[in-house]
Structure formats: C-alpha cells, structure tokens
Length: 435
Image: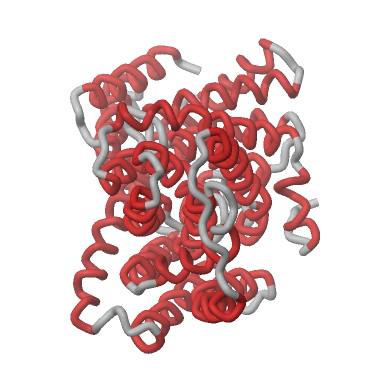
C-alpha cells in the first residue's frame, strides 16, 4: 500500500469538497489526479473513462431509473394523502397521534417509493400544516418527518440497496430487500417510542378515534397503493422476475394506479415526470461511475487490504471492530451523501467484516442504516434540507428536537449491528442466503 497515493487521493478530494465542487466531480477529479501524479504506467484519462463506463454498464442498475420514475408518479399521484389517512386510522387516536401518523406514513410511502427525499417532501408537505394546526411545534413535526423519511431507504424496494449490491460484488438484491424489513420497522418503532415520550411529556393533542365504517373505507382506499409491495417483493421472491424487471412492473402498476384509478396524474404530466427522473438518475449514475473509478484506484493500491490489516492490528475483538467501523461511517455520513459513501467504503470495510464472519447482506443493512443518520445531519444532509424547506423552518431550530431522534436511530443501529438475526432471519426463511 503506497501512502503517497492515499495522501494525494484523500487530500485532493477533501480540498475539492471544501471549494464546493459537487461530490461526483470531486471524486472523479481527485481519482484522475492520483492516477496522473502517482501511478505513472497507467493512462489516467483512458483508465478513468473506462472504469466510469464499466461501472454503470450493469443490468441491475436499470432498476434505479425505473424505481425513481415509479416514485415520481407516486409522489404526484395522491398516494401520500391516502397512506396518511390510513396511518391516521391505525395510530391517530393515541397521545401525540399525528407524530405517529407522520412516522407510519413515511415508512409506508418510503417503502413504496424507495426514496427518502420523496417521503420527506410528500409526507412532510401534508403532515406539517396538519400538525401545526393541531398545536404541535413546527420544529418537532419537522424533526419527526426528517428522521422517519429515511426508513424508506431500508424498507424495500430501495435504490441504495441495489447500489450496495453492485459495490459488494454481487450480494443478492432479493436477500437485501428482505433483510431490510425488520431493521426498517425497528428504526420506525424507536422513533415512535421517542415521539411518544415527548408527546406525553408535553401533552400534545390526541386525535379523534375514527369510526369503524370510515376506517374501513380508508383502508380500502389505501390497499391499491400498498399492493405494489406484494407485487414487487412477492414477484422477486417467487422468481417470477428479477429486481430490474420488478422495477418495470412497478412503473406499469403505478401509472395505472395514478392515471386510471386515482386519476391524479394526467398524460400532460408525464414529460415533467420523465425529465425529473432523468435528472435524478443522471446524478446517481455519475456518482456511481466516478466512485467505481475511485474504487479501482484503491484496489490497485491495495488500500482495502491495508485498512483490513490496520484494523485487525488494533484488535481482533469483533465487538470493538464493529464499533470502530460504525463510528467511522457515522463520521463519513455527516460529510458525504449516502450513494458515494456506500460505493467508496463498501470495498474498504467489507473484507474486514467478512473476515470477522459477518454476512455481506447483514453488513449492507448495517451500512445503510448507519449512513441514513447522516442524511439527517448538517452540513450535507439532503433529507434535513428537504424537510426544513418543506416545513419552512431554519436548520438550527430543528437540531434540538432532532437530538433524541438521533439517539433512537443510533440505538436501532446498535441492535441491528449486534443481532444479525434481525436482518438475516427473513431472507434465510426464503433460502436466499449463501451458505
């Protein structure tokens, strides 16, 4: 492992980020500079171009634009309001019920759309005014919306789990999808418990109990939206189609639902939805391509092997090593978005954890749950910015109510890390884990 290459790569990357250069360009430029300055036999520009093109030349990655488009249709198609009404039937009558409604609705919407940003925008846009009208502090409702929106990245279908599958060298997408259910619900439960404590302590209002007939009608109205989960995940598990084919099925189903059943998306809306999808997908693909180039350089210089040896030299205690890795990822998540973090640090830490006997599927869930916390933290937390923008509130006013919710997410992370059955039990029941 050549330390000069590591120094050039790390320092140039940090310098570019400090100048405000977008992270995808920072990754690509720092990687190219490293090749030019330190790896003399390698044609830098050609190699970087080849690695970028090869990185995004994957059938599995076709699922990302399809799921992104399906999420765009859901966001516009009235699905959020129906899920909120259904969540209100389930938990709205409890003390602080609207906070629970926000969390449950975010979990449902995030699970269907696979996007934390979409959940924060769609659910927050509806729940924020409702909670404020009922007497909830604006900063509390924004904090609940911001943290609960990230559960959609853990509960399938999830684009980031597809990215992890690529970065890990082929971890089963179906196994990752099933592994995300229990951890995602656990994070949601922890957020509900903390919200409930503050609801009782501060005497937040209790919602009215919905009559049985009305509750049944709300349930029926939400069934078509939730049925997408059974189609996508059920089809993958049953072997009817792959994750990529499932994403195409998701588009067909959401278009029928939004245009023919709910009738809230018109033909004239489709060009705008396609444009938004293309913009989001292009950002993700540039990140993936550039990160694959950086991963190649790190592999060429044996950086993952060096990190593995360094960590193992500190201690061979599995508990301590997982604490160290989680602390590093928590720090990384504060300054880096989840997609490049997964692409860059998976090849570094995966050899370490597999050497400890940790299943790659389990580590993928731990990594995603960990980095989801970073999405809610300044200075680069994208979900934090979206949630504050939707609530029309400044970031510094949201930090105080966010702190106990951070603690809830970290507690869930600890449980998920040290109790692998939480992640592996479900995929093991379907025989999706490699023995």
